Amino acid sequence: GESVGLHLPTLSVQEGDNSIINCAYSNSASDYFIWYKQESGKGPQFIIDIRSNMDKRQGQRVTVLLNKTVKHLSLQIAATQPGDSAVYFCAEAGGTSYGKLTFGQGTILTVHP
Amino acid sequence: GAGVSQTPSNKVTEKGKYVELRCDPISGHTALYWYRQSLGQGPEFLIYFQGTGAADDSGLPNDRFFAVRPEGSVSTLKIQRTERGDSAVYLCASSLHGSGNTIYFGEGSWLTVV
Image 1: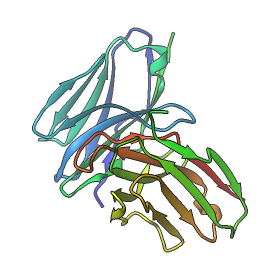
Image 2 (image 1 turned 90 degrees about the vertical axis):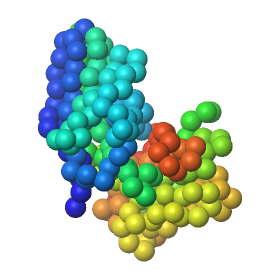
Image 3 (image 1 turned 90 degrees about the horizontal axis):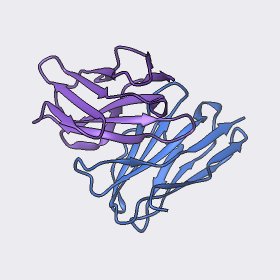
Image 4 (image 1 turned 120 degrees about the vertical axis):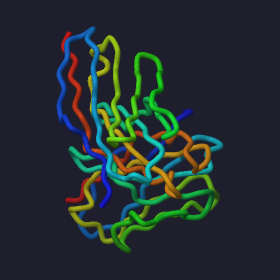
């Protein structure tokens, strides 16, 4: 079936570095994409979203890039901090199923002081 | 609080027992969702309510799982004849409406079936 996957299951960076987390999606009908951060023992926390009519969107210290040609999504975190350490999930939805998010497996981001 | 509230936060039950998990969405949110997350995996969709009605229940794994939202606010996920494979975190989420609005998650109810 359709799925969303992540290229890298783990990512380790030094505090202050920029982080890039990647995600591939396979459902060409998807037109809404979201990044969530999940800390241990907690629920997913919304970070940023993007719709398919955009290729870039910026938030506070985060940027999401969408490449529809190759069905690729990335999350860039600037000046990564130890508090950014968590599992990051991309999710996609679209068509008539905006409430039915399909999540990838997740990338573990570890930020070393 | 202002977020999605779920109770209980932890539940241990014996195989074969009946379990209810409760979700109180963000005030004013008409759309409510249930997801299930196993260790090391991303959340998996179970069911989505728009108001009182289930708009999409295609993720419910079998007829032991049932969810209600009788007044369009609080929802209860009900699991009958629990099995060890039902052990997971059950996440509730809500959004202002169902069409592409930001979906906010609660902290989850950790269910362990022994």
